[in-house]
Image 1 (tube, rainbow, N blue to C red):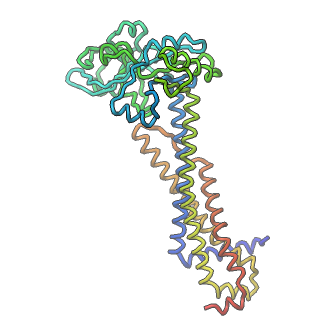
Image 2 (image 1 turned 120 degrees about the vertical axis):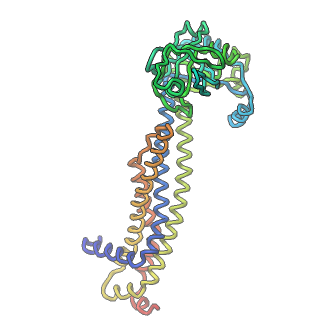
Image 3 (image 1 turned 180 degrees about the horizontal axis):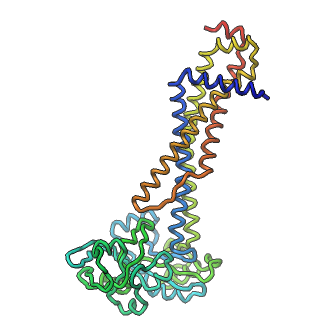
Length: 420
């Protein structure tokens, strides 16, 4: 082991050597900074985004299964393009959910449709999203709360009552500080009575619920959209331990109702997704993306490491006579090797600390920017990101500094003193 005094001398010499070539040292450190900052950003952002998505999924309830429309025999990528191109699936009905409610492990359901219409109050108008959903929505969606007034009842839904509950932003746009409860607005030239104001909720999966107008499902279907189908719905479960079994029951019943082959999922015109399955899918995706970007960051560090090795090798060449002089005065191979290895470690340690600071600042700025846009990702620099970032810097410093340090230690004093 190198004694304490020797260790102090080694690092003092290492720092002094780096100070004599500040420009070269700075450029070498820069490569490490970029790589370490990328690692910190990716790990922190990946963890924050994953938790954000999980929270969004949890807002629908961990005890729910989604049933939505799907184009048969079409991949997810092609289906998105098809829907954008105007394709419609009209086979998912409210009656399907009434039938699903009779399954042993299904407790309740809500189904929904969406549309965009101009909403008018006096001389103010706003194009808004109409969310037609049955009355059970208020009981199932745990984040849906009423700030003023009330939500509509099942009786009002079945009777196609012309009542609405406003999101906070659409309420402010149409009414300002005026009390909206009991007032009448027009949607697509049809009069609706305002019976409630929802509490602020923000964005969920890029839907701004504060800009939505909630209205009874049957009212939206018959009096606004002129349809008899729904886009999607959620069923709640009695026992979440039987989620997989219930998904199978739903698939079997729906395939029977739609006259489809029970075991050929590709031909289904519907899709079922449990919240547990959704979380697993999101977790797999974010893990894969994190690994991909970390691999890119690793390449950046590898390039920086090669730069460190070249710079250190150049430093050995420039200081060959110094090495010979020190050896002739009694410096051992171990001390010479430790000196140049210490220089490499100091470079990467400085780069690691600077990279962690830079990455933390970028994460903070990203989180602030997201919150200004209404997305609370809750991104913070995690301890594992700091540990992995700094450890990576030190490891790369040792790996790429070892060869030049060994070459310096192997120099013979006589040959080194003669070097020009």
